[in-house]
Length: 568
Image (cartoon, rainbow, N blue to C red):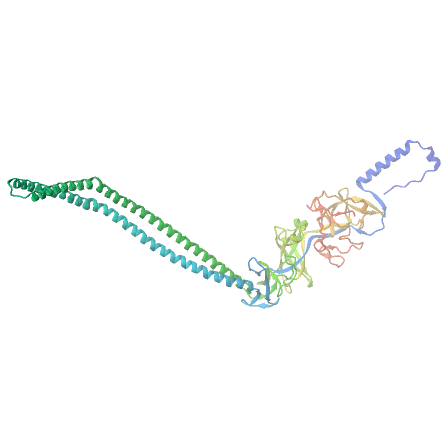
């Protein structure tokens, strides 16, 4: 508060020392500095106020979601690497038995591919049979060729033996005998000529007969020379040449056998390779045929269990951003969920928790769930699972938005709940039985410190406070205020300061960024839930509903954050 004094007269002011104004300025500055450290009065305030309340306070995270069956059979489009069109789909909510037709997809393209693949399989089977028979032919031919080569080698070796041991000795003997016979005939011709010459000298033999005997002797001499030459030719030339020729024939036969053996092995290997390739190709074609047949069969989806049909699109959008429900003519993609069939009465609620509130949520925390379709009932549950990674669908649509899928198991009597119903889950983070709290928009930042404006004698006094957790409506006051004190519901924003150095500070929609208008309540203090109840009877609005997530920052004793109020 400010002090007041009587205004001095004009004469008195004229009598003051010139140093007095300077001292007054210094004193006023010191007083202002002292007041700035603790509190500061501002102009008269006639706006709405709210008394600091002591009582039970519940801190929770509120998110919207969808009711799902906890245990269910999920049927997907299993047609590989392509999109197809629904030609028939059973009506949602239908009770089906095991084996009933649920969905039929367009299989016309697959049917054409099936016919083409069947033709390819027949062609490949013919090639495989030809390769298999060709292998047998090559093997038989190889056996015949190798046998012929082996026989030729054996004959060549036998020819050498026959010549060395048979033919050559025989030829040599014949030539030698011819020499002896020629020598005997020469001796006989010599004796005949000598006898004829004695008879001719006595006149008993005519001259012509003597000449004949002389010619016979000369012929016998020539026969002896020829016979001796034959022996020499046989021993010196013919025998060596013939033996070399026969030995060469053996060597050629051995090489021919090696060539035939190698060629036969190569032909057999080539034929076996061709057969193996044909067999692999046939297996591949048959596998492709079986795959296409399976794809055609997968175009018909039947119920694996008995139950009620629930469309997968009920209560949620497509990951492609297409909210079109399942119906005849709709295009579906590989691994897209089509039908859910609940197999038990248990239910769960699936919500998406913003990353700014993720540090508040833990497995096992109690949850209260309200359903729009059943406004008079509140269901209990617990947090069962928090996804370790952000939701890919939401992040794909908005890369700046990070939310985490959270599954809540519902407990107790779940009569009336149906899959796909819209719900709101209130996750209980902390509950204080007796604590001080004020509306979150009463707290602003001044000099990077949480501050409230207390109404004293009709004026606003700025007062630093220590705050704890908030539930986006009420913030817990740890110290700095007393019960019953009046705080301004509309503090002067021109004196508030914002800072981005604190954790969680940011624009509306981020943690800690409290919009000046978001979550504001009037002097009646309505729209605030205290100890699980709404003091105004209206539904409390949380960051999960409005999309303006605000989490407390900077709390000292609760590891929480202080709410901030940004200046316009």
